[in-house]
Structures are given as structure tokens and as C-alpha cells.
Length: 306
Length: 306
Image (cartoon, rainbow over all chains, first blue to last red; front, side, top):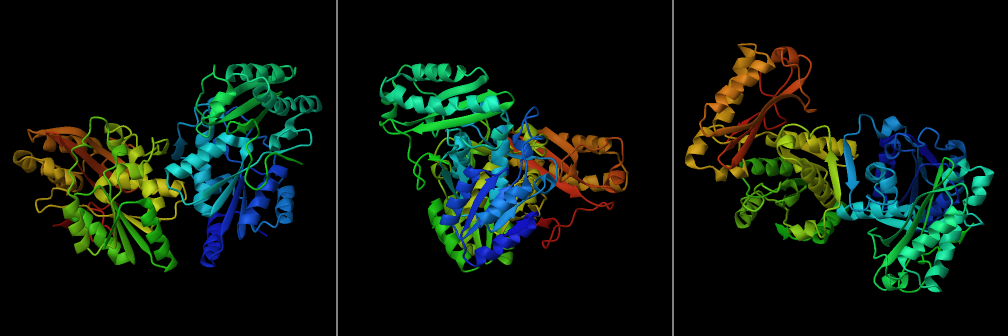
């Protein structure tokens, strides 16, 4: 495994491998790797000849009062995990390498970023789409792998690639969870014991949704109220948003229709963002067709418990 | 020569030629080709194995009250010129092919677009950078050729390519002029006889600038006044802007310093936009070093009279 800090090093490596007709898989991360990242690397390894993992905590996607400075970092451990996963190259640039001067050019995906985390975190998705554009231009991968936990991010990147005719396939990968259902996130490390226990309410609410939709045939309005009641029963939970939107276009849907009526026409996402203390957690589930079950993800077969 | 209307056709052609290790040159245009475009094609042919010319009047870069609908078009003549120039492929997409749905994703280069045409034409450069990004991703050229008449456009595209780590070299090419000095533009066809005669004032003012700077050692403030006086002496001229900025970063410069003092440190651009009737003309000249002469352009040797 090679660790590269500069763009020119990596470009040379990519150039050489493209000459050899090797397909390139790319897993962009902010490091502090967990089983979710590991599943992305595994999928990339299974589908591509060469896999590049990037570790870059991108300042552009953090707001002024967010956790850029304290975002968890452990490069040594990350490199060990990458090595165990047989990653070919870890790209580990400095902020200066990625942004040698003031950031003048931004990529914005407007229709998908006004709601959910886009509303809570102004500028966040411009930062994401801009850095992903840069990384995709540097790595020139055939496929890039993203976790579905950040469902809005996946939608934004997929739209950007389509709109700008980029030459890469975006592969969404299923959410990976702890045994008790908590979606894996590098930020889970921030949770204290009490918060960690209560954080399970997000997963519970998503699980219960299936019954509320399937057995009680709720409207989206009522579903939202149930979700709200279940999560807010955790004393430490501060709800940022609980939204039910069409997917992947993230548009509002008729509140007075039942969810099953809506599912006859389109997919929906139930998306949650909840703070426990200083830690903001997100989770989601995508419902499809007019059957009340979790959308099956390609290959890895739906939600995976680790 | 092949004429292609679809992105998939063109991508297939590009893929095939990249397999054969052919270098790709790209000349993006809005058609109604003139000697300026011809010089870009010539340079592309001399530097690349395969040359793709695109003809696409991009609605995204026109304002609501601008001339998108009436922008001059003559595809048949354009194809004849492309054939004469031994162009390999002309890419001639419909608006629907380039923008199959609402435009959600935009590329913005903020620092370079607040002045000059960016100030006069809000949203214009977002439209330019977005369509150029799309075209560059479709054609994947080694080099792309742009005319220096649109000096701000060249600066914006060059900055975008740098900021987003795009894999293409932007080649600026010198302004091509009519015998009397009028910079070539597809929009010149709009001018009536009287306007056409008076339009020469832009070139005259740029020529005179050299004397004002070199012989009279004017400050930028005085240079601007002289330019203003000379151009506005044409009764039909309505000045949009006359600006003297640093180049290529397009920042304001100290008005009370003489131009020669400023040229000791940096390059400057004298940029003009003037309306004659409904026709908006632009022209510019870049001054470099502390010598008062026109900046030499690579290969084609400065301003070329046709």
C-alpha cells in the first residue's frame, strides 16, 4: 500500500494504472474509519482493479460553529485499516495541498440542498460537491463509493455527476449499523454513555415506521408525528429535523395522503437529524414500491448489522 | 469530418481515439464562425492529433433581456468552414441534449466575476463556467482553445480548471481583428453602417493607450479619462464600462499611480464594453512588464490583422 500526500504523486500513479487498463475504484472519506467505511472499501475492491482511499477532513463543508477543529482523527489507525483491506493507495493531502489559495470556484447543486442537512448546515453541500468534484478530477475513478447514511449527499453527488456529464459511476452503499441498530458514524465517538443509550431511538423510530405505515396505514403527517413523539421521548434528544420527502429528488409530498398511497408513485425517504448534547446524528430509511419494506441495496442486501 | 448531435456518439468517438493514444484538441464556440474561430481551429490542429469543434448557443449564459433568440446562426456555413479547416468532429447538440432537465448544478468562479462583464451581465459567467465544465467532461480534451477577446472568460475558465483540478490545458489565443482594427465577433453582424464606422473607436482607444502610457506617463485615472473621452466622442457609443485592472486576477489597482509604476509589479488589462445601438461590443489589451507594448501571445505573435 502506498500513502501519498501530493496531487502530482497520485496523478502519476493514476496515469500509470490507466495506461495498464486498470479500473479505478475510489472511496472518499474524512477518516476515523469504521465498519461503514470498511464496507465501502470491500465493495470497491470487489468491483475495481485498483482502489484509492482518500482521507481528508474538508474544511469547506464545515460551518463556522461546527466541529472541524475537533472532528476525530487517527491517521495511524486509519492506515492500518486501509492496509488490512488491501487498499492500493491512501491519499492523505493537507488542506494546503487541496486548497493552495483562497477558494474561488464552487459547485452548487441547488434543488437538492435547500432541505434536510442543507437547511440546517448552510453552505455544507457546496463544500461537499466542490471537494468531491476536485477529488474525482484528481483520482479519475471509474466508480466512486458513498455510504447511504448520508442519503442527501449521495443524491447531491449523483445529480452533480449527471448534470455536469462527469465520467464516473456513483455507487451508493447500504448503511452499516452497530448491533443495537445505531448507524455507524465517526461522530458516534463524541457520545457519552447516556447519550449513546438514547441515540438508539433514531433506529427504533425507523423500525417502527414500517409498522406505522404497514399496519396503521398512516398519512405522512401522522407518520411524522409518531416519529417525533418516539424520538423526543428520549430526554437528551434535540430534534433538528424529521422529514419525509420523495427520493432521490427530495421534494415535499402530500401530507394528508397515506404513505402507501404515495409509495404507489414514488420512493420516499424518512430522514432524521437529532442532536444529543453536542453530537448531531443523522439516519434515514428509503421506502420503495408499494410494499412496506426497506429498499434493498445492490449486492450487500439491505441493512447490515455488524 | 463527422457531425455529431448526441453526447453518447461523441463520447464513443473520444473513447476510441483515446484508446489509440490520439491527443484531443477542443474549440468550444457558439457558431457563426469568423476568422477568430478559424485561428483557434488552426492552433488546435497544429498542437493536437484530433480536433473537436463544438457549436452550441448556450442559453444559460444569456440574461433574460439579452440576445439568445436572435444570436446569429448559420450552421451550413459553419460546417463548411469546419470542413475547410480539417476539423475531425463538429459537436452540434440541441439545448435538450445539453440540458435534459432543469439546470440544478452550477459552477461559479466568484473572485473573477464581480467586475467587467460579470457586473454588466449577472449570471453570465456561471452560465459560461457551467457549460464549459460540461463540454470539457464530454470531450475530455488535452487542450482547449479560447480567444483572448473574451479575456475575462479566459481568466474565469483558467481559474476554474486550476481550482477544480481539471485535467486539461487552457490555451488562450490572440485577438483577431478586421483590417481597420475592429475585433472580430459574431455580434459584429448586428452593426449598421454608421455603427460599424464608429465601432473602430474601441481599437483606436487601445492603440492610443500605448502613447498615453508611454509618452505622457499617465496615471490609471487619467488613462481611464482619456479612454472615456475618445470613445464617447463617437455619437452612437454608449459606454458600459472602461476598466483598468490587474490581470489575470482582475482586481482594482491604485488609481493615482502611473501605469508604468504599476507595470513594474504586475500585468494589467484595459477592458472595454461599449454598446452601439443594440450591439454590445467588447475589446481589451493586456500590458505586461514595464515595457509599453502589447503582450506577445504564444506562437501567433501578438495582434493579428486579417
